[in-house]
Image (cartoon, rainbow, N blue to C red; front, top):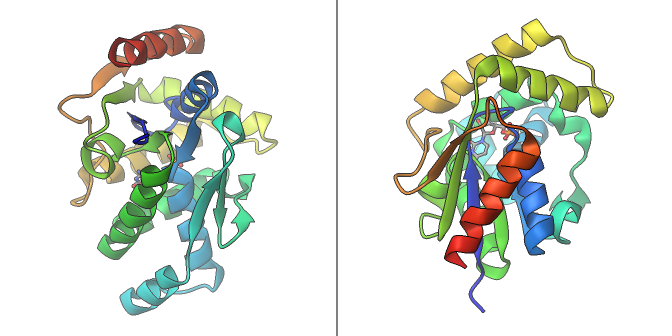
Length: 221
Ligand code: C5P
């Protein structure tokens, strides 16, 4: 059967990951966290304390291979055979990811890697450009949004649960700056696809949003 793809895009901290994992569990398909692919790419590029010179980046990208295994919230993304860990989840690494995500060669590489995964597996694909650039043919696209402060609070709790405590005021600044950079970049900026269902989640709880998304998916399948 042709893989079935649902896309979820939106700014940082809006609850995309939580909802994407719940949807993936519900529909028993894989979950692709493309933000994690950018985070891991930035982490690896930074590991050798490289000045991100373009030829060095292209050489490094040639040695990167992302794979996805498992299903639902147990989906595991690996880079060169090693599963990604929570080390990439900090806001610092998020900003590195946003910085490398502006580089055209990095976007081309990610596009190929992400489509390759989507060609073989049904997915809930989460990121910034899933509905606009990577999987424009997806039959069901969501764009989640929420006020900046509310998103910072959600990210704060998430980091706390991971044992990575953060400062709320700092998070508001960091997430705001990262979103601005993601919205205003030239290549694949953060925005809703024309045919995306836009959900403002500021005043909604996660169960409410989840039910709404499931109902929308059922309409088309
Ligand atoms: O979703 P997450 O916060 O993990 O994403 C980290 C960064 O990776 C984003 O701020 C964005 O710059 C970049 N990204 C992207 N395209 C995607 C997913 C993430 O540019 N599809």
